[in-house]
Structure formats: C-alpha cells, structure tokens
Amino acid sequence: MKLHGLFLAGLFIAASVNAQTDPPTLQFTFTNPGARSLGLGGAFAALADDATAAVANPSGLVQIARPELSLEARGWGDISDTASRGTTGIETSSGLATSSGVGFLSFVYPRNDWSFAIYRHQVANLDTSTGVSGVIDDAIGPGHPGVVEAGTTSSFEIVTYGFSTAYRFSEKLDVGVSVTYFGGTLLSHTGFSYLPDTPEARRGGKTISVDDGDWGLSAGVIWRFHSRISLGGFYRQAPSFRARAEEFSIDESTDSQETIRITEGKARFPDVFGAGIVYKSESGAMTASAEWDHVRYSLAGGGIFEDTDVKDADEFHLGIEYAFLGITPIFALRTGTWYEPGRNVRFVGDSILAGVDILAESRWHYAVGFGLAIPHFQLDLGLDISKLVGTVSLSAIVSF
Image (cartoon, rainbow, N blue to C red; front, top):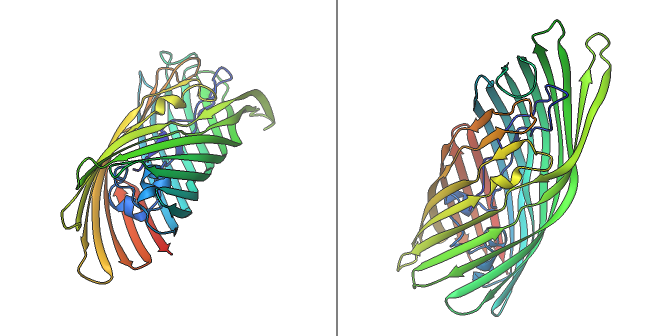
C-alpha cells in the first residue's frame, strides 16, 4: 500500500496581523517501502510477503521463512499545480518537491510461528518551493481587500525506527503489530507582499518550525480463506509533532523586522487504515492484488493548522505480477495503477483566506517493475509515474 501525494495542498500566507497560522505547502509522501510494492501500484496489504511488511502490514512478516536483510534506495519528484475556488480568492499556486535517499533498511528473524523485525524507514525527505498570487476580496475573510504575492520554501524530513512482530495463529490466520518512533523536522519560510487598497504596501512573512518525536502503533491481519485467495487489513497511526509559528512584518521605509505573533501547537498527520485482496494462480506464476485505503486527512486540522478544514480521502490500488518460474534466475514482471484523489484544504475561522478552497488535482498513477531472484538473493526495480510526478525504487533482499 502506498499512501502518497499531497499531505496538505494548502497555502502559507501571512497577509495580515489578523491572520492565524495557515499551513505551508507540503508534499508529504506516506510511502510504503519496497520496489515490488511500487511496481504493483501499491496494492500490497494482502500480499505483504517480504521485509517491507513491517510497514505495509506487519502480519505478513510470518510468511518469511529465513532471516533476511532488506535495503532500498528511492527517489521522488513532484511539480504540482493547484487552483482555488472562492468569491475571488487566490488564483494560482504551484510547487516543486524532491526527495531521495536510503528509503528502507530492515532485518527480519523468523522463529517457528513467530517473526520479528527491526527497521528504519525514511518516510519523507523533501525540499519544496511554492509561489502564489491572487486577489483578496471584501467577501473573503476579515482582512483588507488587495493583491497578495507570496513564496514559500520548506525543508521537511520524517525518519522512523520500528520493531515489528507477527504470529501465525493457524494455517489461515496471521496477525502482527509494530511499534514505531517518528523523528520529524520541518523548517518553512514564507515571505509575502500585501498591497491593500490604501497608499501603503506591507511586507511580512512567517516561519514554521518542527523538531520533535512521537510514538505510533500499527497492526495488521492476513486471512487465507482459500488456497489461492487471501484478504488483508491494516491500521497505521501517524505522528503528532510540537510546532512553532512566528509571524513578522517588515517596515517598507526602514526594512526593519518586527515579530507580531508567536503561535505554538501540534502538527498532526493523518492515520490510515485499509483492506486488500490477493489472488494467486494454481501454478504460482501469476499474482493479482487490489487494495482500498482510507486516509484520515481531517486529523490534520486543529493545532498549528487550526484555520484549515481538510477532508478524508479514499485511494484505490490495483496490481498484477507474472513470474517466469521455469528459468534461472527467476524473472518477474509487474504493473499496476492507483487513483490519487485531489486534496481539498478549506480555510476557516479568522484566517484572512477564510472561505477559500485550495484544491489539488486528482490523478491516476501508473506503475511498472521487474524482479530477479536466485537462492538467497532478490533484486527489484519499480517505477511509478503520474502527471508531473515520478517515483523510482531499487530494492535488494539477502536471506541467510
């Protein structure tokens, strides 16, 4: 399963001393690790048969027969366009986000009906930039009418360290749990120019910073109700970090900076739950999987983002794999697709943008991948592409 795309397709505009802390534009990927999962379009919850199950669905770890070490390198890039709806509102917004590095590292140790894993997962490592311009009308928010131009740069990282265990209750039922520590850092700067219908023009900005940690739990289950068909489900808890926002204004005549507001609160990320189904052919060569994920984006409201209202989203994933079992090394081809619904961030409360909706475009993702396997070693490559977005993953697994 891949929880992907925009975490908050919002704006970060400090256009008035009356404005509260609006969210920065953050591209945040809740990406399950592994090139195999990526090549299957993220439809992995009911399959989860390698070390990356520690994140995707921990119950799948009990399917691993030998101790194994897994390593993944991943790169990701996004050039996103958003549009607003309101009486007049913000007219345009665009962003750029990139990420790369060691995405996943784990060790799995199976023992009888149990399996144990430790892992490190780089959930996000992003640098983003956003430019925005538009018109604030009398009918929108408590601020003065005028023209807004703003730019935001953000650096954002979340790294997790976890311990997972799985247990086989019977030939048909596996369960698993994970305990995860999240370490998060964010530094986001926004500068704006606000030109109301007065002789004066104002400049200012905001800084949001996060440097905190949190613990979370996840759980999963796999039920093999038929020799070739299995169902899987999972729940994954996301972190909540302490955040600090500082607004400042700049005197046009002297360029001197004055702090006008400091806000502290929580930056909450969305929990996720989902379910999937997988079918394997009688020969074992073909595998088809499907998955539904529910992302609780509404949890992102409140705290430091108290003036935003974000709706939950449902994602759908499909994938198929065909393995040529009669050759050495075994060669597997994969393809998949999934639907990423557009996120809607609505400004409410005392925000100067109250009543404005910032919309991220819905998009279909298309994935391909392949794998090579010999005894005790497997190499996988996966590629996921959509409009203006690309992810590439290379994974290696060594068993002992």
